[in-house]
Length: 191
Image (cartoon, rainbow, N blue to C red; front, side, top):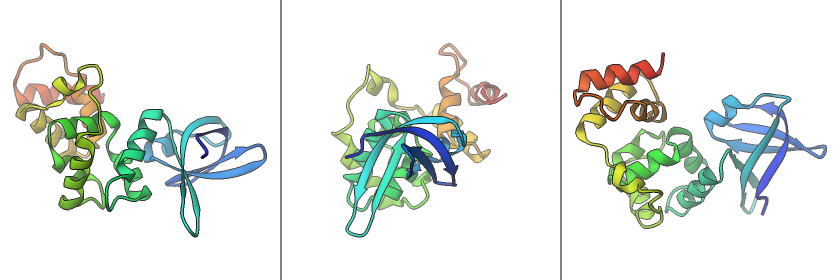
């Protein structure tokens, strides 16, 4: 198995990078964020996962081991292939996935293109016992109705779920428990 790749970005497409390693260009499918962040000509280090099929070999790359672990977990879900698992990680970061699993919110996965109600429930059921509590994350993971409204408002304004959750995490702990005020503070994160 090819566990990692270190090399120079030779080419960048919408969903993959060509990483030159020892004179060989390897096409590595990556998350949307990683594709946009990578710069042609710059060195990059990726955690990778090799998918072997009868007619093809595909290499998937991630910026962290945690992302690769979540990719592997998602591949264990019946009906989720590598492209769909990558789409989930392009839309939701590992913390957003953890939060959805611990709060038992399968609807979070519906935001991923290609994931319907049945698949989102399968993902939730599969990950429920596989994701471990990290530093008390489970206790803090459940979003209350107020924060769910703020995330809903931010995604309605065009922000991704990852951006919305990052903005939500930037709100001070002692902030007022008022939707409008919390939304204002979350929007300040983007300016």
